[in-house]
Image (cartoon, rainbow, N blue to C red):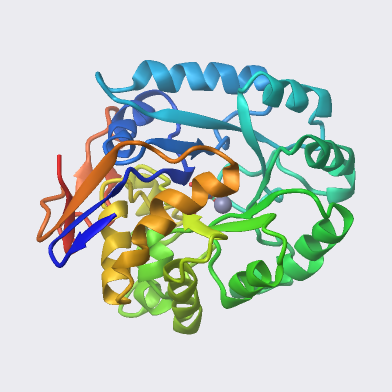
Length: 350
Ligand SMILES: NC(=O)N[C@@H](CC(=O)O)C(=O)O
Ligand SMILES: [Zn+2]
Ligand SMILES: [Zn+2]
């Protein structure tokens, strides 16, 4: 990596947590991820979800068919864990190079999670098999217990579910997806064996819950897990910029039509694909950690997933970008662009 005050060249980063959706939305959002990232872990929470290896093959084909001309981008597919998931099917998926990981959504925790897991006891044989064959478990780490305050749901998930999974499957590789709390960071730091990693989103590094709620509710800042108080944001910034190999880039870019966000019951998800790399760079610059940006963005993820780093590079230049406020999606489904117009201090050179 080379850093000058106004120019930053680094190995092409990967996005270890991405929602691309399907159909017209897929075709609209995909070019904005392929412009910056070499690979991405593709989240399986479509309707219906990507549950089997055959589902993942079909979805991968649709993504590849939607790639812009000349794009060099590898979608890394995941399967959505259900109480009916067949361990043999997952093993075949890994064997055939289709599946990179399996995603655990507690049923009801987030967008399109109703087909997820209600009772973790029911998926123990699947977790045992994943542990045996080295297939990582990616976790949306929030409880759905209505008695638990939404701001505490990540911390309680760690105690109730993550600690027990770790204890019962000590060799299972786990990614704590979109970690949002100091509790989550501390949990990852407490695991000394390198088997537990975490992705961190740009918006959780930038926003706290005041940004979401003070002066009026900002539906485009609403995501799950919901942004937390400032002390948690600072813990995430410290973790991301530390250089610790267990923390890596995952945008959780999650497009929803504006009409579904600006609604009486607005849905969760921030579409940040256009500005994500610039936002991360700005965070690292603010923290005086630009020398560790490439480690977080381009090296730690491949190391965790035991994949080679990308050969190509990207260059960021200091200065205003001109991002649109909205991304056009046919069918009246335009998407609000995170940090469109309120531009971050960097742009990625074409
Ligand atoms: N993060 C979100 O708020 N939403 C994601 C789902 C998820 O990652 O939990 C989505 O698919 O819209
Ligand atoms: Zn999630
Ligand atoms: Zn997500």
